[in-house]
Image 1: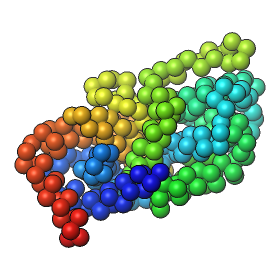
Image 2 (image 1 turned 90 degrees about the vertical axis):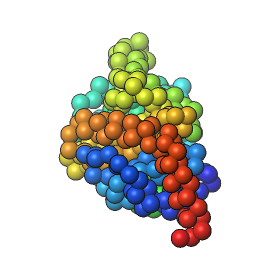
Image 3 (image 1 turned 120 degrees about the horizontal axis):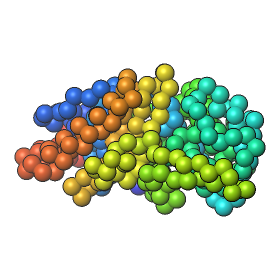
Length: 291
């Protein structure tokens, strides 16, 4: 966790200079950031510190919170009317009240397809009520030094804010958990109820992961009217691990178009052109000198 905190500090210092890079791509998303995990550089930033609603990308924090509360992955949890009530107003669910699933499968339903009945069910399995889950999520944000991230709702339907930069750092933290990384890297999965039914096939909402054009590690999408279309994902480009976050695109596919534009820009510019490498090195030297 110390490493994550240090990364936040380094990236914060480099956000503004990153915007000076030549030939920056035009994006639809109102906020965006690209963080090079190995160096801590923000190699691209667009309003990366603006506080915005984050919709179902909230579920990254749910996953971190329940994992920290010793969630029994092989334990069974039944979906209740309370879970249905907490998910009201969200997208269609496939977790019917009264059906019982393993907690691992509920994590899959939540992170792969963003099922809104899963967060409170997982919280109950970890010994938390709804308010305790929200408190645990805020505690995760505090531990990761995410000063602009705040939660009032367990699934992102009626609140929760962060920034593109802090959301990227949260995903990086989640991907250090082998279980969460494995789940968020799955293109599809079949979730099976305790009685052998239902059998529910979930397909990842992470379009770049499914398309395989890039070496995508894993990520999470989200949407509400207030948040617009959101997307955060990790990817390997030119041998480097990056985390890209996009907040508030107006169209469902615009965030994925933005991802393709930024991934291509990084691949062409940041590490493959010597003059850009030199520019980045000089920038880091100026920051280290306090300029």
